[in-house]
Length: 88
Image (tube, rainbow, N blue to C red; front, side, top):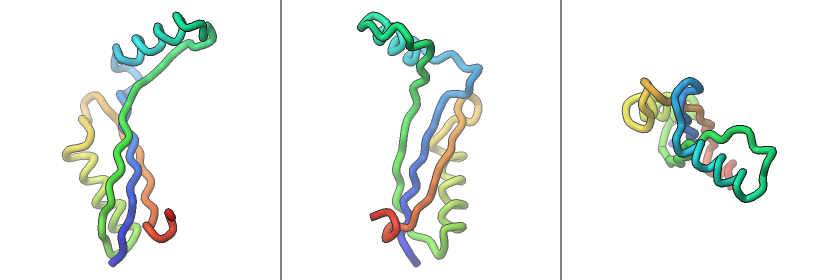
C-alpha cells in the first residue's frame, strides 16, 4: 500500500451560469484589466488516499468525485493522482 495525492479540479459546466465568475471578471475590468473577457470560478480539492496502486487510487477518487465532491448536474471534474514519494 502507498499514499497517493489526488488533485481535483471541479468547475461549473460551460453552459451553467457562473455569477461569481462574472463578478470577478467585472472587478478585474474595473481595475483596468480591459483584456479580460471571461472568468470561470471553481474549486480545487486535494485528497491523500492510501491504495494498492495508482489505478486503485484513481478509481477511489473518481467515486469520491461522483458521490460527494461534485454535483454532476451542474459541475464537471478532472483530477490527477500522484504517489506521495513522487510528489515531493
